[in-house]
Amino acid sequence: MSPPEPQRRFEAIYETHYPAVLSYVRRRTDSPDDAADVIAETFTTAWRRVDDVPAGDEARLWLYGVARRVLANQRRGETRRSALADRLRRELAESDPAASIEHDHREIRAAFARLSPDDRELLSLVGWEGLATEEIATVLGCSRANVRLRLHRARKRLARELESAGLDLSRYGARAAALVGAKS
Image 1: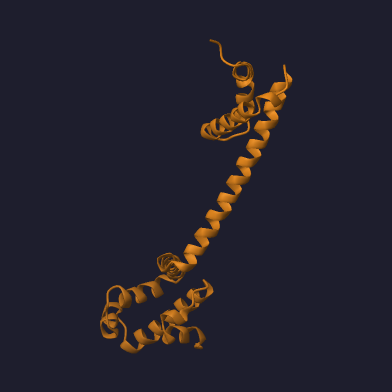
Image 2: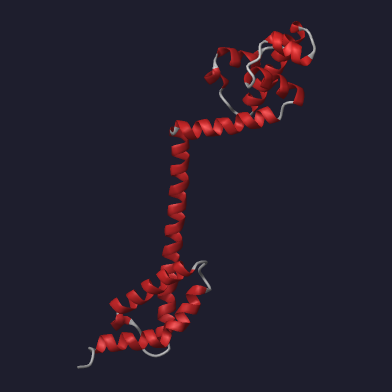
């Protein structure tokens, strides 16, 4: 028993025009997966609308038109997905404390790196090593008063760098915010 007429017609269209449609689609897509999706959708449409497919070489042009619309739909869908993903990333970054903290940490590291080596060393002795003013004076070979003055100035410069990076210093306490407004 032979297949019904619409099936035979579709098979003939597929066998005749598949290579041309494949070439058309591959030149317009970046990945084999995308090309496979477009080919599948194009020939699925041809199967559903086999009676609408013109005869002869006009079928190839009709299939190109279908593939063109499928490609356009695929691009619009990708654009929507990308826009949605970008929006979700922004919303998550705004609402996710961990993402906000990571952003702050990057900005803090960058602000710290912009300080002079002397300021970084002084702030590191306090923050990382946990040294007191007297201990820092011993390490640096200067007076405690000199350490206090240099430390105050280094903190002010760091606070200004952090403020210029757009960080809200009030999150780190009134003392941190006050350093930006302090003169000298």
